[in-house]
Amino acid sequence: MHVASALFPITFLLGSTGMTTQAAKPPALMRCAGPEHRQFDFWIGEWEVFGGPQGDRLLGSNRIERSGNGCWLVEHWRGASGNHGTSTNAWDAQYRVWRQFWVGGDGVVLRLEGGLQGKAMVMTGELPKNDGGIQRQRISWTPRDDGSLIQQWETSDDDGTTWATSFRGTYRRTTSAAD
Image (cartoon, rainbow, N blue to C red; front, side, top):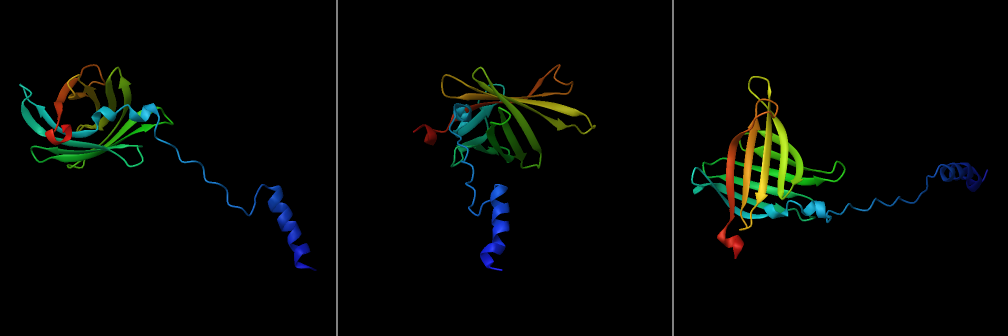
């Protein structure tokens, strides 16, 4: 039996099942340049964050940067009291929501999702309470006309019936970032 005639059945079967010896082309890379991917761009930059009753107490600094491919934002928080944390923020095109994955220096992990509500980015999530219940979380970032923005973090222990502010900070671009 010749080798060619012995390989004919294998070649025929591969061809008839759609299998070929050529490598399939990989799918085109998803581009992250759509308008949804730019909705949170107002947060990008180097910031000093102020709060307190008069809004003049330095709470910390925050650096927000876009990834090289433009698909996510990375947050680097440094609190004035020494706490720190980081988050990754991205538009989830499949589910059509923004998502944030925060990890604090204390090990707390918070997952949020949401989107634009008017001019504000608003995301919600949940954290377990010490007593076994759930505490709802809601964070909003609202740009202001003067270039600053307000971040307000609220919590609810009654499934969203009432909310209490746990953090309110005014973000002001650092002098070096404004130059």
